[in-house]
Image 1 (tube, rainbow, N blue to C red):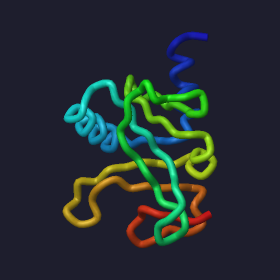
Image 2: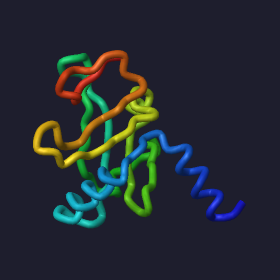
Image 3: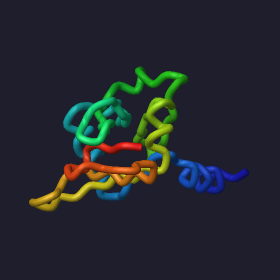
Image 4: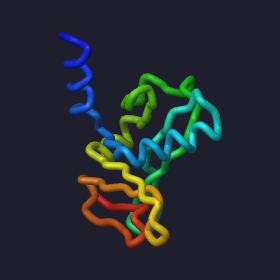
Length: 122
């Protein structure tokens, strides 16, 4: 299998999708904090709809065998497998609009979402 074919299959198998604008924004944020960081995405109990999204930068040394890692041209998104059950297929986007801007989560697994877009229910 060629490297191009492997890369194509990887992008089709990514459990968490990242738009170009979101990738630019997280790379910019990461550069202000340190270069050897990955973006951890997950869920936790709470929020208006029962579960809320969480994301933060962390050192790549904290990636464990219980995590799935999605590579975007050298930038890693990490998600623990339990959270991935709720997030598989998630599209993370970013808008710099004055009203309603910021990171936006489009989750195909969410049966309901709150008005702020930061929490969901299944």
